Image (cartoon, rainbow, N blue to C red):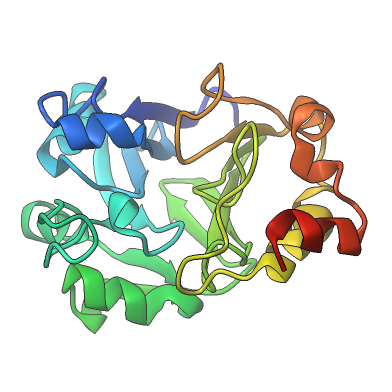
Length: 240
C-alpha cells in the first residue's frame, strides 16, 4: 500500500499560486491523494490556482478524479462572490469548469459550500463519517471532526491523516466563525482523534508549524490542545 499510495503536499505561494501574495500569506496546503498504479488521484481543498494544481497532478502523470472538502471556508474551496476576502478566489467552480469530477462534502457543510462557491447540487457527493472514497484501488476514509465548522472532516489514507483546519501541528482550528463550536472541537480532539495510532502522520491544512507534517505521537506530546483534557479548562481556554 505504501508503494501504491500517492500523496503530494502542495503549498500555496510555493508550489502553486506563486504570483498571488494573498494565497502565499494564507499558507494553505492542498493535497493530492491517490493510486500510483492507476494514475488517479483526489485533490483535497482545491483553491487559489486550480490550473496550477491540475498541472502539478499532470506533471506526475496523475488524473484528478474527485475532490475532497475538509470544510467550507473560502481558502479551501474558493469564493465565487468575493464575500470573505473582498475578491474572488478560485476554487471548486473553476475545478468543475476545467476538470469536472465529484466533490465529496460532509452533509453539515453542503449548504455553505454551495453558497460560497456557486457549484450545483449535482456536483456534490454528500458523505458521512466512515464513508470511503476511492482513487483507483486506494481508499480514503472520511472522518467527521466538527468544531471548526459543523461539517469539518479529516481524511485517513494509510497512515496519513489530512486534517484541514481541524488540527495543526500547534493548536487547532478556531471556533468563533460561523458553524464553530468549542465543545465539539474538544470532543473531536480528545474523543475522535486522540486515539489514532502514534505513527499516523498529521498533514495539516496550513503551514503553521516548523515542519510540514509530523507523527501523531509527537503532536499529542507537543500540542497544547491535547494537554487540555479537563472540560472546564478547555472552556476557559476557549473563552466559553
